[in-house]
Amino acid sequence: MSPKAAANGGLAAKNMKKNGLMINVMKHLAMFFVLSVFALAANAQTYIKLNGLYALAGVVNPAVEFPLSERSTFQAEIVVSPWTSVTLGGRSGPMRFGIFLNEYRRYFGERNRGWYLGANAGGMAFHMTKPYWERGVRLQQKSAKGYGMMFGAAIGRQWRLGERWLIDAFFGWSFTSSFYNGYSLVDGLVEGGRIYNKGELILRPAGHEHDPFNGSAEWLPNKIGVSIGYRIGK
Image (cartoon, rainbow, N blue to C red; front, top):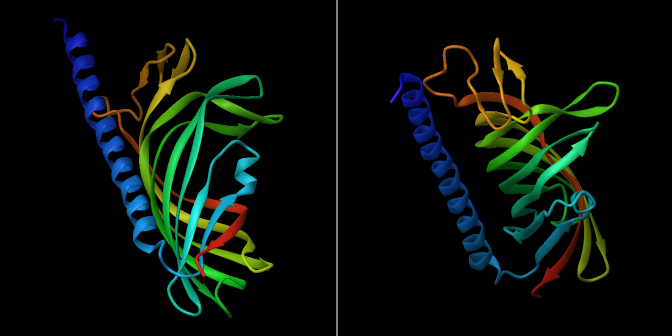
C-alpha cells in the first residue's frame, strides 16, 4: 500500500469515528427531548407549538412549553431541515440539519402572555452549504458536515387567542461552537493551494492534514419565528 493510500485510509477511519460520534450525540439529544415531553406532558396548561415561519421554508420546528411557576416556563424544541439539495444563485448544495434546544423563559407578567426573556442551550448536527452575497445570494462550492453546541438568549412575546390558542413571536442569539469537515461540491475547487474534485475531503487549514476536522466559534442567530400554539390539559 502506498503512503498516500495509507494516509487516506487513516483519514477515512477518523472520519467514520467522528461521524459516528455526531450521530450518537444527536440520538441522545432526541431521546432527551422525547423523555422531557413524556415526563412533563401531564402538567396543566402545556402548549404544543409549530413555527409557521420555518414551515414556509420547508423546515420543521415543533416545540412543547411547560409551566414551572406563575411567571416562568420551560420549552423543549427540535428543528429539522430535510433538504439534501437547495439551489441559490445557480449553485446547489445540501442544507440538512437537526437542532435540539432547551429554553427557560421568564415572563414580565403572567406566563404565556406578553413579553418574556429566555436562556437556552442545545446541540446540532448538520451537512450544510454556506450562503454568501455576490450580486445576490449564492452558495459556496463546498459543504460542511459536523456537529456543534450553542448557548444563548432570546426575547419574545405571546398573545392569547381565545381559551386554548396563542401566537408566540421570538428571536434568539447564541454563542455557537462547531466542529466539521469540508467537502468539495465541484471538480477543480482550489483551496489552500490545492485542487479538489467533487466529494473530496478538504484538508484545511494547513497543518491539519492529520486531522481534517475544523472548528469555529462565533455569535449567530439561533432562533427566529412566529409559532402557533395549542394548550393541552386544563
